Length: 257
Image (tube, rainbow, N blue to C red; front, side, top):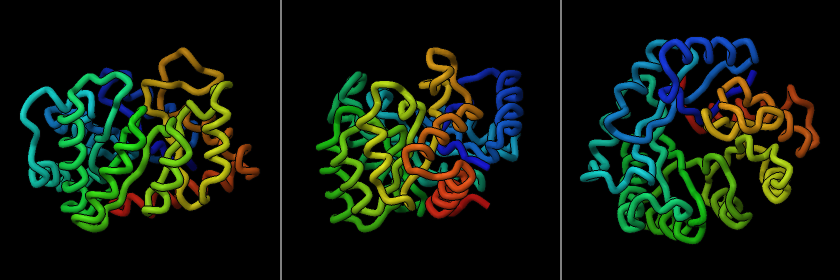
């Protein structure tokens, strides 16, 4: 059994999502987490979690959307997570590749989500793209100022230092279909070397379909292909990798029944 720790099911139509969840179930993906990118989307995320027993959710504002209006308070974000099937905060973080929002707004948004995660007692899903130094700086500052919070670097495609320093701070790292791409040897090397108890897998669907589906629309059932490559990189049997990543997920996302 596998868990897709990060997908975007609300990007699909209602009819499509029915088929996608069914295909995931057939592929042995027993749980999937649909991720928030705007607070206005929270109701749709919650509706999906209520519709499908395999689906859980998070609430938050993606860094791309951090400049769209007034940011909610940490308390308001945490309040949205009181729903019984919302098990995390985010995704939030920094994206300096696209820079769709001012960096100051991204940083403030990120800090508010960290504080919301601490208030809610839930893990934060972090988006990090070409912003490794600032991600680490904010994580350290917020940890020093406010105390412990759980977090996950989702869809890891950053440098080794960010992964290793995040793990030192108690964080987890999730690998997507990028792990399977021919030019991703550096990421496979990081995945090989990180502590086993900090590894998760995801799709980030509908994006980043793994080999052999690259270029097609991704969906949660395809996480099996990423998991297979991770198992090979770690020198593990597939069944053991499935057990490992599922146990890691449940340790991090403790709210999930």
